[in-house]
Structures are given as C-alpha cells and as structure tokens.
Amino acid sequence: MPSNPSWTWRKLLQSRDWCRGWFTVNIGNGSSTFLWYDYWLPEGKRFIDMHTLRTLTATGLPWNARVSSIINEGHWNFPMHITGLHASWQSIVFHPKPQLEDHCVWKGNSTGNFSIRSAWDLLRDKRPLNNIHLLLWFKGHIPRQSFILWLAGLGRLRTMDRLHSAEIIRNRTCILCGLHTETHAHLFFECPTSKTVWRTVNARANIYWPCCTWPNILQWGSANYYRKDDITHLIARFLLSATVYLLWFEHNKRIFNNQYLTATNIAEEVFQQVRTQLTTMQFSGAIPTAICNI
Ligand SMILES: [Zn+2]
Image 1 (cartoon, rainbow, N blue to C red):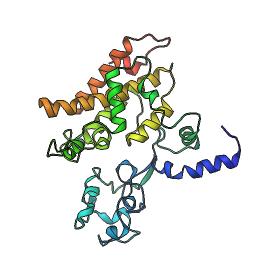
Image 2: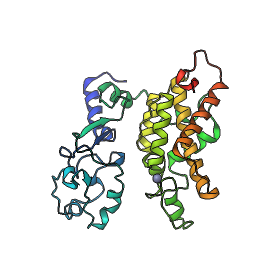
Image 3: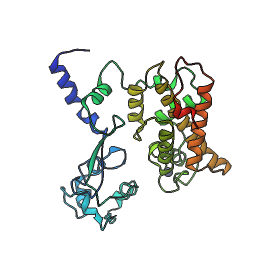
Image 4: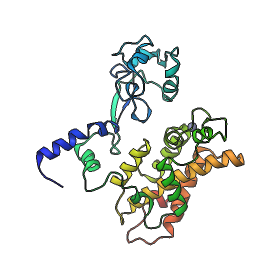
C-alpha cells in the first residue's frame, strides 16, 4: 500500500461517493434533513438521484424543502398527486419520531458512529472490496446455502419482480410481508419480516450484520468477517448464509406449499442450523456462550 499522503487523500476524495452509501439519516422530526438531497430513504438512497428536480418540485415543495414539510402532527403526509413518486413514498416503511432530532448513522461498524479507522478498513487495498468468496467458501460452509447466497448476491434468484417480467406470475407483491413490490433488495433486507429475522438473529448470536444493500453487505462482510480461524468471523459467515437461505426457503414454501413460519420462527431455525453446524466442527477455542446457552 503506498504511504504517500497525497495518494491517501486522493483515495479518500475518490471514495466520497462510495462513502455516502454507508451513511443513513435516521429521521426524527425531519427539520434538519433536506427532503430531496439528503440520503434518508431506505438503502441510503435520495430522491434527487431517482427523479428530476422538475418532478420533485411539481409536488409544490421547493428544492430546499426539509423532511419536516411532509410530516403533519407526527405522521407522514406524502404529496401523492405526482404519480411518478408513488413507489418512492411507498418504500418509506418507517415512521417519523417528532420528539427526536434527525441523526446520522454510519453503517461501517456496530456503534453507528463514524470513525476514520472503520472507513479506512473498508477502503484499503489489502482487502479487496468485492471479496465475496470469503463469505461463500469457508471451512464448514454448507454448499446449498453458499450457492443461494451467491445467486442472491448476483441478483439472479427468481423473485416476484423477475417472475412477473418473465410473465410467469401477475402479482409482484412480496410474499413475506404482502405490502411492497418484491425485489432482491426488498426480500432480504428491506422487508419488515426480513428485518425482524436479522434483528433477532443478530441479537441472539451477539453478532452485528448491518441491514443494507447487497453490494454493501458483501463489501462490509468481506472486510469485517474475513479471518479463517476466528470463531466470531466464522459464526457471522454462517449466520449470513443461513439467514439468506432460510428467507429464500420460506419465500418458496409460501408460494409453492402455502406454509408459513413467523419471523421469530425463521430466526430460531437460522440459529439452530448455525449451532448444529458449529457443534460438528473442531475448534481450538471455546464456542461463545451466546451460541451455546440456549
Ligand atoms: Zn416484504
């Protein structure tokens, strides 16, 4: 890695666009967040990247409007008269918190607080950003789970939007929540059901996986959980592949067998599969108590 300071600054400046995807604004009362220009939408998106300013201002809200301008008495008050914006409004599945200020969250570590070190860890050349093989093929991995994770990362699973475009089905609604259009990003990370599964699994195993986009989660995972002989890194990789696999399995069971598990039951299944897999392996150190004591 070059130690030349100008190279370092150039690298950081080049990474500004990339870094934006790692920040998200948690909306409180919406008064300090720009409605069209700040990254506060799900997946760290912003309106101005998806729509023209002309479409946005056709709502009657100016270019410098704040998010608070679409909050009324603590509830969303979306301007619904512009059809082209409907999908964006519908993607907002969280509620404002009028008693709180807006605050920025860094998704590069478990604390949510930005640090140069965590950003640099994600950027530096010694760990390639798309080193997905570290998350797929590791000691003890389950091939069918790794295969589904690989396909999901490539966006190649036959989610509802793809089945619809292939004219196999007419309905594009997510089978897990029944609320939103089903895409790869929605099914595994944005869906309220999937979010509950991630939260439950993370809490029970005492592991952190950020809920973000496919490219980001794979970048983040390969930069943070890459060590071969570290039990925590191994558990994290098992959890990722088992969670993605069992969410996909649940998706297919609902469509083809009409069988439903709750989010809590899916999380429990993930946890049990990981625990079973770990107990069949040999380790020099102890398995963490969060995994053993159930
Ligand atoms: Zn859903």
